[in-house]
Image 1: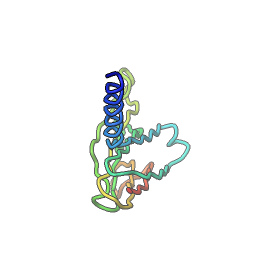
Image 2: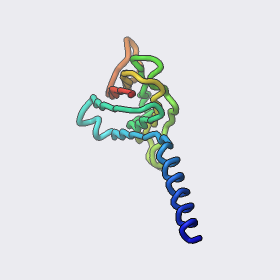
Image 3: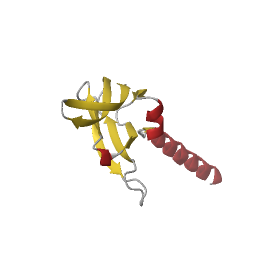
Image 4: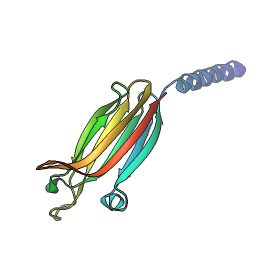
Length: 140
């Protein structure tokens, strides 16, 4: 009887471990760039190798009180999509301080693309680009 119970428990454990190993989980990748970092370098570049369902989260310095904002272009459609965009206010009591623009992109199809982001302000006579960030993405 004891041997039968040990065998049944072993079979149940093997089954549970087999099922849990088949569960696919996505990965999150984060990039955070402060105003100080952009003060040192006007352009940043990252490479990512993703699988479908993986996400890239970008936290980029942004001071909306100056009229500057981040905008982006994706070079190849249907490989990644914007999932979310938000603005995190600066600490209370600091008037005119920078906050953070938060972007989330999700890999949805195999292929290669780039997300080209520009922190700019529209001025008379054209667009003034202050900082850039480029993410080169390969989805396998």
